[in-house]
Image 1 (tube, rainbow, N blue to C red):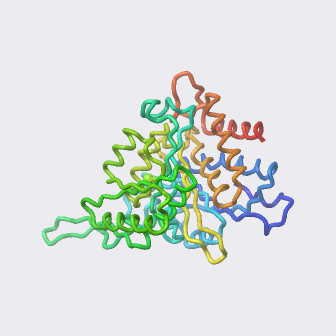
Image 2 (image 1 turned 120 degrees about the vertical axis):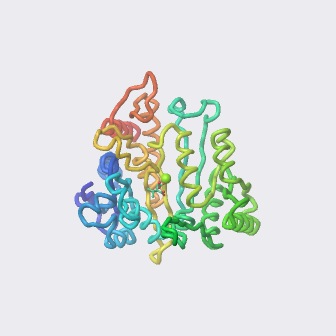
Image 3 (image 1 turned 180 degrees about the vertical axis):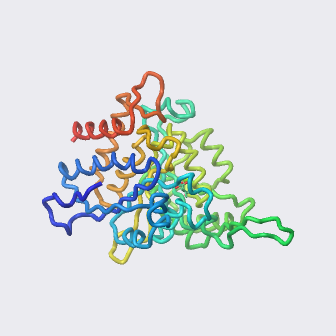
Length: 380
Ligand code: IPM
Ligand code: MG
């Protein structure tokens, strides 16, 4: 991405420290489009970034033998924000869990205690025909899924695959949530709701899982103590999946655990037209220096099937960078500029393959990135 700070006219100390981890597959391709925007903001709007780039995922495995090095985790800890691409490569699907490319993102979340993953599902008007649902069902869609990301079955112990005395094998994972883990993510959801539609729907499976029962109790208690002004409802995860397809506009903020959040956010993304459209922010604990750990990534993966073809949609990565500007660098105006530019580009009829519909103009990654930049120039 290049060291943007070197040619800036302000002091190094004023530059925000950004760690860029493009990762695998389409990750580096879509990240390149963010780099253009970074340079433009540097030249035109005084955004000073001190950028470090590192390898993660299969790219790191190939060079260093591990999905992420401890030095990289350390760098992440000292950065103002991390911009992440995507990890995953079928070439590494046969290896043990500690050597999978996916470990990179899981470890970052865990080590930096990035516990609240914000996944907005917003429909751009111009994409209404790309949605899997009828226009009248999705029009105006604006949901925020708050997914817990350092607990639950992703990290619970015991876990593993064991061989039983009869020679057959048993795979084990454990869903675990503590009161404080539930409370801190619920707090983020309630705060978020206050700035939006003021409604939270808490999602679990309390009908079959003790951890779900505790989830519901803790959220209810917190609501009673501190957030009575926000409207709270509860829903079972399977019903929530169904309701998201039946009538998605009933939701404002959804708060849920790691696994349900993973599934429901993929589902919600399709309501907006494509997995290639959705950004996310993962917020962590507030550090000693007063800054909050945070990582920004598109919710799509490395898409090995289309990697290297120049056809990937860069918009989720670009919109993730906009979230970074808003939440970590306090630059809401730049974030809005990017979001407005994306909206205008879509309105002008440009489409990457994943959001293509009849009558629109199909473009590749590169052209889409350039179009966003041109639009930013016009709007600025
Ligand atoms: C996501 C991804 C990750 C997850 C994978 C890559 C480990 O699907 O961010 O949604 O399951 O959390
Ligand atoms: Mg996922």
